[in-house]
Length: 163
Image (cartoon, rainbow, N blue to C red; front, side, top):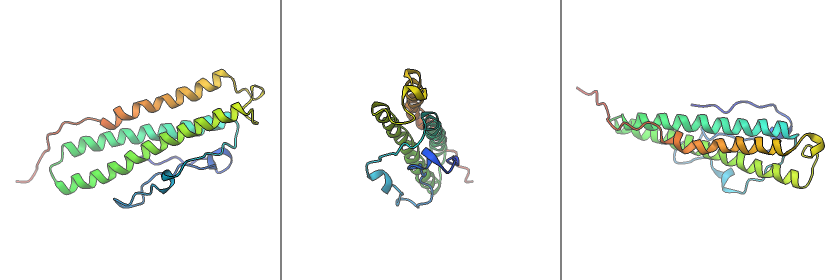
């Protein structure tokens, strides 16, 4: 399963760092953080924030791809207990992919807020231009691939190996 990469322990990436849901058993998913409005605090220059958001998007895409693989495995498994176990893992990874993408989008909004209010690190003097805004937008657009990756291969022909 995809592990969220470790990030430097100072600056923007510690201002509400994403924590994947992997430790809680089904159906007790650790979603409490995402039941509340997520208000990121951007504490770094835009280059570091872009890198932090890039990490979130990369993780979301890798996790969505893993969900797709698990769905394919479920479709080709006859053992009901294995199907249920795979379903639990799939649900947690699905939530991870969605939460990481959602956090990247929310952080992106915070970056625009910083720009509008001309905060340090987000002014033309800091190199934050239309080109920089475009880089944030293109990074976030990559999350549109998540649904296709989650769908994954679905052959639907379980292979029962019982004699």
